[in-house]
Length: 525
Image (cartoon, rainbow, N blue to C red; front, side, top):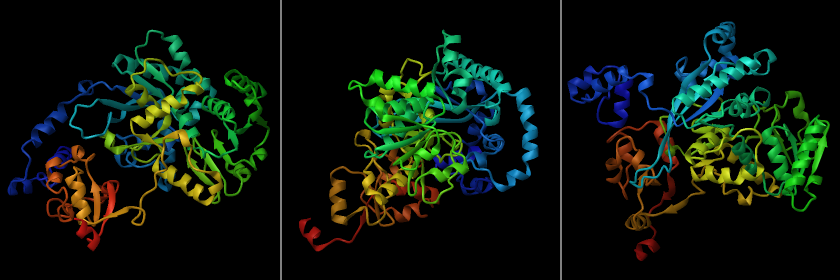
């Protein structure tokens, strides 16, 4: 069935009867490549697959997270992870598996594999593609914060890095606790222990910091910061202080606060930016801040300190519970990639939507695409934030649409907060409704097509399909025959009855609403 299903999508006029191929035989629609494809897939071994160019090394969160591993449940793997009621019923069995994993399993390879295209454009030129995989250390969050597991986990991470290096992988990204300071100092310990590694180790925190920075409304004056002494927090605090923003840092460590003050003094040419840093001994100090940056898990009881109608930008793991309805909680520690640049990505990444990556994961991908030769380990260099952000934008990464909508909604309600940062090169992407898209009549449509634009009409909407032609499962020719024409009947059963998911993809290519010809436009024509 999987072989037939895959061929049905690439050769749309074959293999209609996925579970009863006898009818395809009888009616002459059985694809002759089915048997060969099946036997080839059956005989392919792990070592026959091409080596990955980049690997992201993740780990388990809560214990039920193991259910998202594809070979355990493909259904759950394709959805955002969340703990459902029935998981509590099988919790004793899940916990019983934990010591078995401890004893026999170090890490899962190829927990998710996908292909990334360098441009996503259908220019006809050969473009660079990289093969990416996600691996996972077979341990859970509670084990990472338990002292007795520290050496074991550090050894497992080292083993996974060496395994990836032996396979010829170029870059390995360390996710969440795999780069924790108490485990391996952000990957520094591994680099120092194995100086001859060919693989480049990337913690990805530079892109995480850049993502947070460029999501912050430009007119923000006071920021309250939790998790401010982490690698990401430290770079952000230095950058924001130098930019003249008042940074209220919630930390119990005077020593770490003083280190950040010294960093600001070192990089600040004016010499006064360090005065923008303020140490806070309690969350009470955040009541008057414009924006909260949440870099450390916020306990439910602590949400009471968030100002009314405030903006909480979080990038911590695990994410905070959204307790307050009057607070806009926005995930800014993740980035979405243009779906035209990614192939074969069947799984969701933890609690994120499809095609959305944790920023540190995206950082490893960018490192590979840019062919940077350095290891990104240890502290985050605040001066590198813009360089990494610009590279991410170049390859189609952006703030997730859901996060952008939330920030846009907040800015609409609070115009005094200003827009997104002017230098960020990121636009707040909001789904366009009928009254936001421009209109186009048939004469204008004809003129645009005559000018070389690849436009088709579906359900009264004008779609620009230029960037989708090369990715259409049925091939370019089926679409190009409808350029400048109405293809509604074709996509609704005349040629192929498309799924609801296909129509959701079509919405992203809408550029105008088709309206009847006006006398003026007809006269101009």
